[in-house]
Length: 63
Image (cartoon, rainbow, N blue to C red; front, side, top):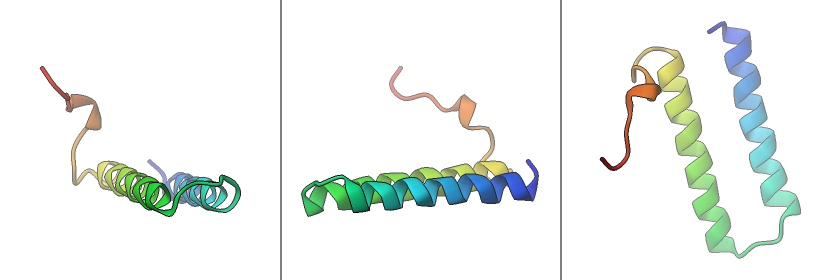
């Protein structure tokens, strides 16, 4: 994945997170949980893009 594409995806993650925090009225605890989930997803995406984590398609939840 080209570096510019990775930067664009991270900017989109950031804009979505900012928009959710700014414009959607929610309880503070729910926003914190949502922020953590989005940040973990972004970290997993970056690790996968650099090949550190490996392929995310091989992960299975449950059986």
